[in-house]
Length: 429
Image (cartoon, rainbow, N blue to C red):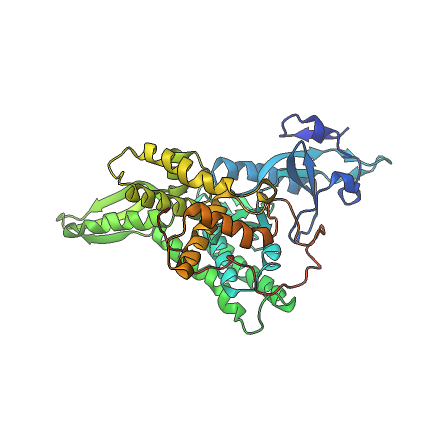
């Protein structure tokens, strides 16, 4: 009998064929989901309505990755959630089989190759790399050395026209109290090398134009990382008459989605110059505010978009001096929920509700421009469902072509409506 560790009791999981190598599991146990390139055998299963990812690997890797994923969850860093590990597996002949790591499937997430099966726009590459750089910064702030940062080891979720990145492979990582500049630089160099190679692979497969400068695209991960790291950690000096710069620094950090829990402030001997440096920086500034006001738990850019619409609703209804939570509840019931409810039940696996709301606002803006009038939001939602959403691929638990791998996906043409929009306008509802 195999040994289950770090796993809540679940009879459905216990009854699976653990004495069979994962590559040989019967099809009726498996779920066809897009998966990235992996050096190990990876399969997806469904149990009691929950989808899990199973990875078969050597015991030292499985045990280590399970521990690191739990650590990352405790540190609130975007990563897949480990459910547990299955050890001491043997086949029918009594021969040992590698253990299995069980992680919870991240709904509405896609490996990078699945993203490129839907669009060829170079702007999508930039947004993916941008999201990966932001994830690497968050990992380094938490003291996590990845050791194999790449698009392949990351899952991406749509985030109001951008992407949010989640670590999906932690077996090469290591957690420290704080990373040295050398460790950060090494991780960043690995990311640059890996991403350049992956972009070359995409180009060779026909997913990217031959005219794209892949090295320049790979360079953006370094540039984005360095800019974000500097904004979050570097000290800033100014005169006492420039205190507004302190507020500007905090506002820039908030705009990037980070909260400043503490500032280290020093003045020089004559009291004329001030030196500040963020001490404790937490990500999720907008998502935490939206969660507090509405109970909606969404990605950071989605939260920023929804909060902008909430603020516009507050101004349009002349409730600037009303309690913020009361207005938020009114916006939730009168604006957000009617849009979500306009999506038929059979289409709700296409996109997350917050991403649907973002795209409806975009659709409304374009339709209003063409019609030379302001479309009511619910009318725009119905138009979006009929003309855009119905043709979108299902991203919660579906493959683009019904296969269980992405190795044979054909490149598609650049017709993915609303996947790559201009920077969104923050209008009221």
